[in-house]
Image 1 (tube, helix red, strand yellow):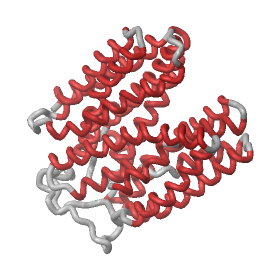
Image 2: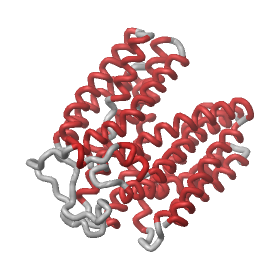
Image 3: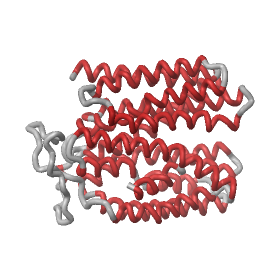
Image 4: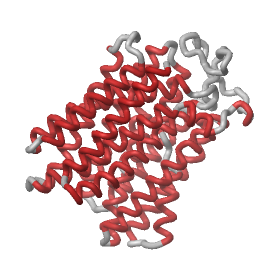
Length: 398
């Protein structure tokens, strides 16, 4: 658990760290933004492919291959930032950085599915992981700010490369050789989570054949409701960031935007842990419906706020609904994923939130620039409504 926290920190530093380092080295924020976008896009595309590889060959082989390549990619980006590299070579380095980014959180969740003994325990594990994700989401940019301000603009990249080596490689070495395969599955080929009490993995387990691993499209179709939820949560993050930044600028407090926005992450982390207190009788679809509706209502109040203090408090309230919804989305993905496809399911969730953040930032940023922060909040409100509709649809279809 300690290694998993430290190993995911460098990847939380990538977006802001890349933006800071490349903007400083080239003198162009547009170049920094393009570099960041290429790395994020490559990571989103590579995520499910890495998950498919892990389902077939096991996490250990994948991690022992990817982690050293990821360290090399960070070193190349550091070199590019220190030398002012620009053009095709810089874009190639950014693509390499994104495509070798290890989905630590997704791999950790996949491991939990083989360690727990009941759905209740799995919900507890996913609550913990979502809390760690939220705290890393807040901590990553903070590390970038501290390193860049106390040393030099490319220092966050150097720090991230060091963390990959010190935490990523031990995380890889301690990983199981294969994802777990319980002895019993139901007639439809799905794992019976309530009865899967023997989900152990041994070092001499044979690698799965390709016939044992479902194709990526089949897995994505099975977990589609969870993917849509995560896309919308990401769109909420991206659009709220744009709207909050604009509102802070209009109120003459540009430097406070990050702190105001971070409160949503803190609220989300707090309630992600509290999901374990929700009775099993409250169905997952009901939780999604309540979460989406709560997000939409609190975001509407945030849009109407006239001060940064009120915005901060209301965004904290938004986060109270985001955390449980994110945990529930992972639980839905775990339950719906076909046998042998758990890593693809988990990595697709991480890719979905990355794509959602990018889309939300682009759409929210454009509307905010044209019509003000209320328009940016409107994008987030729409995302909350879609989440509620997905919950209602799953509830109706049982």
